[in-house]
Length: 313
Image (cartoon, rainbow, N blue to C red; front, side, top):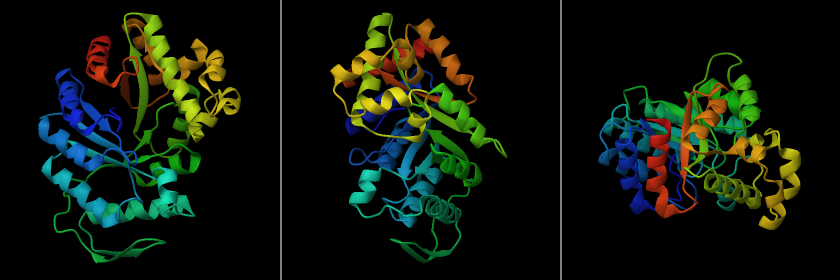
């Protein structure tokens, strides 16, 4: 996975390297107000030949449903079988500042996902909610390949919804094995639901270098003060909760090797292969590795190559 923090002008070159080094799928993210997701996916798909590209995830509220449906159907028609979209709530901060935050999230998400699926499939629909309206709309160029749509989810209700109305679930980074085992239990209550996990990874021949990078990744997350369902169920919530928003000097003593390893895979190639097995054993279907090399964006290409060599892709 390449985050939206990667500058637009560097995205295509890195994606080509991802394909050249043997990876089969690349996930791109969209975070407001950084880099546009559909435009990035289109550029990557046009510059590669076999790489599967997933967008995970696009907010179902920050674009009008008909616009989302057009974007999805267009990329599916242009790049048959190589593009899949992940939809989700989106950034609470962006939604609130835009006055697009729904009051009843689960029902609202369900309604929008079902609407977008109908539009992409070519159905004529009329619909409306607290902020958007669709009147007798139908796409001129719908998708006819049974387009797959994933749903970004963390909490019990959203995970259950993914199993109900999506083709798969995208699980966010910083999901520990303990959380993943719980989430798999929720997802597979009735029918199996495919899952993709974003997982920060730091590979280096020097364990110390990889460990320092991994610790700084987790520290930045804690400093940001963002609270999520996965963090609450991580097994480390009692440690993390009082540290949210604290300075690095306060947080650093608590970042034990055991704790960092629960959130980030790091070490030599052999060590990373062993640690990845722990996450694979939770039952997730796909792991999208997030490359890191000393948190230096200029070394992302090196990090991608290191991952490929370490995993013998």
